Length: 332
Image (cartoon, rainbow, N blue to C red; front, side):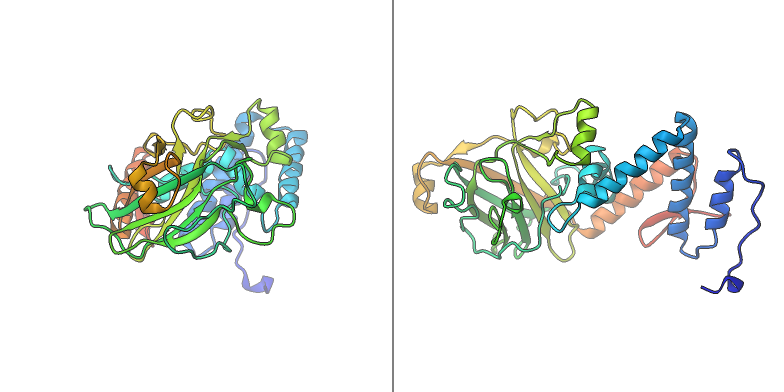
């Protein structure tokens, strides 16, 4: 960039009192009004945090070193920054803001750090967890439907599914992993149905051998998640849904380390009947999970998101307009 072509506004005398407006001023040349708004609010709240806590140099450096360690431990199969976002409640907050759900539709929750893009596309009724790799898994039949908010069954919905093994580990945590296990991609049939055979979900700890785990220890928090199965739904014209189903009465139901549990996502497991055992080729008495998912259209979600955004910002005394579905300040 040629410095002579950049028009930098003159800065005021720099001090603790003027650093915030100076930083906002020098960032204000950005022509992307959404980015300019996000940076203005980020700088404001970040500086206010330092002022309110009277942040020391040692604490600032400890924070820098912590984030450096978070970055160092990230890999293709481990995303420590997502984990950090999860345990701070930010992941759930952002999903709730960006993907609001009207009543009676399926709520979203956190993605977590163990979703991958290499799951095999499998036909209905497939066994997604290898008994050879995990002989201790208790068989579980999963029967689900997907419909719109108007009740119409949705065909050809892509569903990404993943869960741990019976020891509470995802396949990517196994040394020498060569093939995906405990995960699959499926599509709903003409009646909006999909079903598969997995194992009974178990509680497990999030990775706590890194900086996020050390932070949890300092905060006197445990690293455990309640038993659950992850689902991600995609269909053209419908809002992207990342969710999970949690077993009711799990010991960690009310203290999930990543704040993922919602009442509407709690389920009770049943048992496979003789008729179901015959129809789905699974042993009678195996665990049974049934759920009806409800997706909302992109239009429904966008309208609700704008409505809630407008209400939130007006509650803060700010007028706004929307650009590409996101709020920016409305300048008179």
